[in-house]
Length: 332
Ligand SMILES: Cc1cc2nc3c(=O)[nH]c(=O)nc-3n(C[C@H](O)[C@H](O)[C@H](O)COP(=O)(O)OP(=O)(O)OC[C@H]3O[C@@H](n4cnc5c(N)ncnc54)[C@H](O)[C@@H]3O)c2cc1C
Image 1: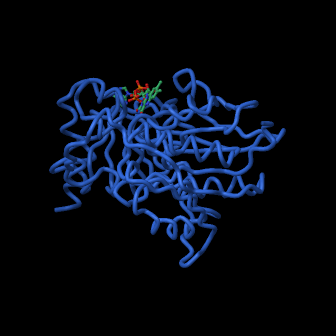
Image 2: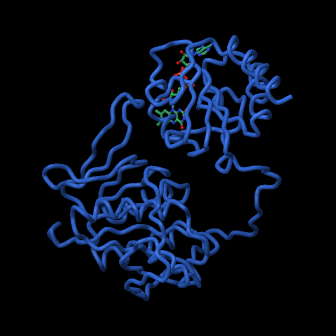
């Protein structure tokens, strides 16, 4: 089949236990930008069991169509049944573009579809668009973040990408908006090779870093673990939480849940302090949409200063004790 026969922008509408993942709304918003260029229909593909009620939410956030496939075998995410279901739908409808959130689930499912559909996949795209020749491209950091690669999939269809969280703000929902609901009958069997015996929430996580209004992030320039106590002290004074760039997680000083960036989490607090962090592309992806960005770095050439609203060129060991003391004075 000729590639010109593939039409439409599809979004994988990830849900778990009947709750849509927040990235789905971001993907719809991004697709609206693509639609302005290509004029193609935006379809959200919803797999699960007893999830039909989510279609209204997808319409309210901007989907033109919801393609719904329900089966007991799809009640909980399971790689092979989801792969089989989505493959059938793509082979039947032939979308031109298929995008997924770069979530744990999306990162598991998308490469499987790449294999079953024999097409291309860009991992962790930070932008999507059409170039001057009308070719759909996906932008992603490459060579350790030294370049931003613009990737195209010229021959195979659908053109697929997992998309990093936070690259686009969701549109404001339009209450009562309607679209086309296409209910599909698919044949899919549960995976007999393993069984989920029990699911338990992670206990006692406390306040989520993603919900914090203030984040105090530390980087590789912090040479001794004991210095993290200063960051904790500042976080306590400002009622925030400590986070970090990847090196401190690699050191084993902080758990992975605290890592901001491409392979960590994305935060958008009102205020973020970046302490001894250079500002790599991969790190910036995790915090660049914060409202007020403060950088403390001893090198005035650090790239983080290009993104900071307030920059302090200083050794953090000198700056932080003085800053903390001043805050304490003002608070008392
Ligand atoms: C596929 C891939 C995914 C990645 N994902 C992530 C990710 O999710 N998150 C992430 O963070 N990284 C990620 N990285 C790593 C990333 O490329 C950088 O290596 C990392 O972000 C650098 O962290 P940093 O800024 O803390 O350290 P550095 O780049 O080493 O910067 C340290 C900074 O501290 C400053 N400094 C030193 N001493 C002091 C002092 N006493 N006072 C003040 N400033 C000082 C220095 O001037 C320097 O600017 C990824 C890389 C790849 C290839």
